[in-house]
Amino acid sequence: MKEFELIRRYFTEQVIKRKDVVIGIGDDCAIVSPSERQNIAIATDTLVAGVHFPEGTSARAIGHKAIAVNLSDLAAMGAEPTWISLAITMPEADLAWIEAFCQGVFELCEFYNVQLIGGDTTRGPLSITVTAQGLIPKDRHLTRSGAKSGDWIYVTGEIGDAALALKHVFGEVVVADEFLDDVRKSLDFPKPRVLAGQALREYATAAIDLSDGLIADIGHICKASKVGANIVLEDLPTSNALRETVGTEQAYELALAGGDDYELLFTVSENNRVGMETALANTGNIITCIGQINGSEKISTTLNSKSVSINAKSYEHFANNQNSKD
Image (cartoon, rainbow, N blue to C red; front, side):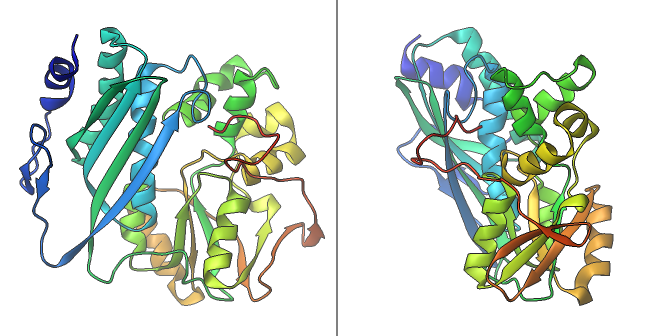
């Protein structure tokens, strides 16, 4: 199938037709018309085979994750996702693969009322680049730079299972059958915390999504805010699957540095804790307080109130001697 026929068949026809899209797929550019009272948040992520997802990952999972990681970035800023552009490079036009990929893409788009408004298709090694855009009421966006000493550190959901799934794929650990499906879903089908992000606009002082690992991502908040942080290891929200598979100490390491969780990490002042916890409960999100911001401009970890060091090095592109990132 040739390029333009492929685009017409798989990407042009969609269930979602937003009223703020003036021109979508089919012209040289898309045209959108947001409200004057809103700002536009824009995020772009690229997923490369063998780096951001293991070889052999299902096409549906790749499609889902390509959208989810971008919506997660929007969630971290408190944005409502609205439009995406998709550029896909693939070795060949495998129609069964493309159909499954589109299923993963459009399931998430339909759930969050997001319209695909453009993109590109090319031949080459498999990679997917998505640009996602969303709307935020003016002057209501979240950033990494607002955390203050005394703020409490929270995270949504559980962390570490995606890293555990990757270790299972690479044969470094064996996850029991009773846990494997759920653990693999954490890696292949992350859930962007879109509603949580919008609720946090009223309460959080800073926020980020967990993609590179908790230690790296709290480090981004600390650097931007010129503060330090202490993480309480026994309070990290980890699953039974993670603890029973690798033990407590390595569970801490994977939760801190494994990455690919796509949960929200955020800070909130003492005065806003009760209101935030009520608001997040109303969105159906489980949250956990895992530490506190301080003025040290350093990151520390404690276990049972005692300072401990832990071997937790997050993934960084172009660094030497690292396994693939997922």
